[in-house]
Length: 433
Image (cartoon, rainbow, N blue to C red):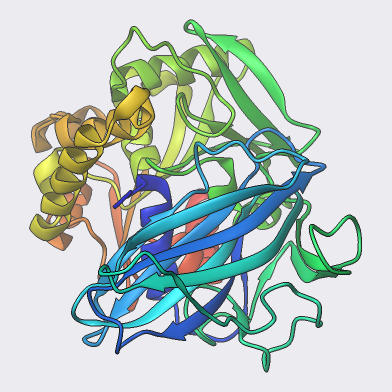
C-alpha cells in the first residue's frame, strides 16, 4: 500500500474536519462511496481516464482509493497524485488491492491540487473472488459524468460523505470539451491558488533555487510552511496579513517548486542558511516570521543563529527535538519511513524519505538553547496537537520573552481549522496588542 507523507497529513486533517461549510485549501476531491461489506478478501481494481490542461508547475491530479472498516479505521489507502505523469492526452490510471476482512465502504475519488483544468472520465470498479479469472464490475453512479454533478447521483466533494460542502478556489462540473467517451467528462478547475501563481519568482540561494511569492506592502512578514507543505499552506493567512504587511512566502527546499541538492542532507541548519541568504538578497534587514510546524522550527533557528535579522517570531506546532512529538505520531512516522524505504523502487520515494528523516533526526536542541532567543516569541499549539502540550509549554517558558497560546478544540492544523482566531492572535502579537 502506497503511503505518501504530504497527502497523508492533509488526509488526516480532512478526515477530522466535520463542519459543513466552505473551506480554503489547495486541493479537493470528488468521491463516490460504495458498500463492500460482503466482499471481504476479494481482489479489486479501480480505473479512470485522466488528463489535465492549463496547469502550472506544482499542479497535481490523480486517482485515489480508501477502504473504511466497520470500526471507522482505514483498511486500505492509496493515492496516485504524486509521481504519475498526467498530460493533456487521456490515459488510464489504475489502483488495485485486496478488500480486507473488516471492510465496509470503499471510497473512490478524483483528486486535484493547485491551479489548472483537471479532467476525469469513465470510472470503473471491478472485483474478483480470487478463484476465477473473471472480473465482476460493480456499477458506479454517473461513472462517465453524462449527467450533471449533484448530491443525488452518488458523487460528493471531499473525502467523506457530506463532511465538506465546498473547497474555495475550485469549481467542479461536467464538461463537453474533449471527453474521453460519450458527450461529457468531469472537470475540476483550480484557480487563484497561491504557490503556483504567475507572479511567483525564483531566487538562487545556497546552491538551489527557492520559489517565492510576495503580497501586500509594509513591514515584512516571512511565512514558513511545514514538512509536507508548500506556500499554499498559508492560503488562510495571506489575504488577512497582506492588508497590514508585506507578506513573503517561500517554498522551502525539496518542497513545492523549489529545487534541492541531492548530495546534501536535508537539515534545519541548511534550510536556515537558505533563509538567511534569501533575506539578504531581498535586502531585508529584519523581519517578522510566522512559522508552522517545521516552519516554526526554522523560525526558532533563525532567532537563535541570526537574531539581528529577526524582529518577532510566531511558531505554531513546533518542537525542538523529535521526542517532542507525541509517542503514537512518532511511531507512525517511523513505520511510514520503513514502508517508504522498502517500496523505494527507482528512487520514487527519495523526497518523502528525506522529509521523514528530517523530523525523525532533527532538531536536537535543548531547552537551555532557547535562552539565545531575545526577540518576542509567540509559541502556539492546538490542544490536540501532535506536539506534546508539555513540550510546547516548556518551549515558551524557556524563551526570555516567550508567550504561550494553546488553542482549544484544534489539532496540529490550527491555521486551517480556526484561521480567524489564529490570524487575530498572531497579528495582535505582532502589533503589541
